Image (cartoon, rainbow over all chains, first blue to last red; front, top):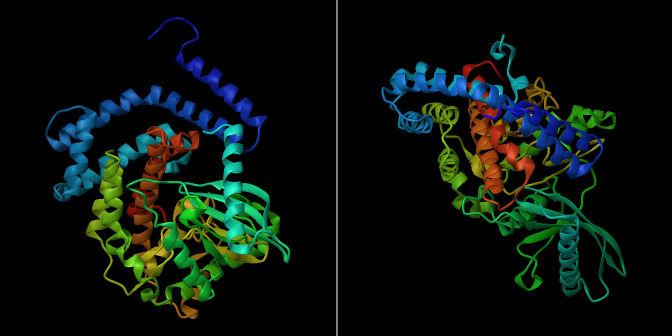
Length: 122
Length: 339
């Protein structure tokens, strides 16, 4: 990571402000595209902040649940295939809880305001 | 995304061909006027125009298929046109079908139907003061429409039996999900739950398949027309109930399950009092959870259109990340926190 200024977060904020300003001064598809662009940058911002910690925690839980190691992508694949084949039925509460937690992690990045109070941080 | 000049050239080309297509059917004196592209939807392009003849003027709509994908979840425009003819004959509120495009029209595949005046934008419908009466009527009117639709003999649309969603709707969604080679733990847990809790067989009826806030034209008085028949198939009547009540189609009005407009009891009562079958609320819940899977997969399809370059678009890019919220709805509904 570069130590020069502006840092990544500042760059994101700067471009997001530009897109929001375009959105407030335009109509129709241009406005909608600009709003989508600003939304996607806020996703990037949150993923930079939360992503690494989420990956580590999910990886640990999946290794425990599946009894094997691997990249997070491999573990997701393994988990999904085993759930689909019914091989996790006997550990259903644990499998469901992992999937639920993973989804809450993803929503925390995509749109934390969407979460019900019981899942909001703090 | 096409620029303004690219869009204009496309429109000019379509209008020129459309005018020839109309002259072939309505005579040399017929003309096209007042054209505008209404939507560039997920699967269709919609063009509004006036057909001008010596005898008068009619506002019509051209629908052309724009999505050509091996995993397209949509029935062909030919079948859509056949459906429009059937439901129009039965008095279901739909735009009058006018004619189907033919190869010599050189306009791809699609059809022309009457233009029904009104509004389809969900947030406008849910918030604008002039739609207050329409909002009050929506749940009961939808119950009446479903009763009429589900009473149509499925043999009249027997060609829909071959649609994969008519054979096994859950297997159809799973196969579409698998086509994108993505792994979503939330979706797979949901799929397993759906497999383990499949509803008992119900009488097979003709279902719309995509009846929701956004696919219905409303005037201030109420529903004027039901659009977007490209997901029609044969299945359980409860599937249509689950889809219109999906949380995504409430557009923030989560306390009004029927499209964000009204309560379930009015909806169910109107259905049964108009001859509809017995309502099974557990089944409807299953179909709502199924609906989340389906909506998540449709969002993956939009994101795929962006990522493969077939239809580059910022909103479609957002769809890919929106799946997380749909998965959240799905699991919260399974847990009993959402209804």
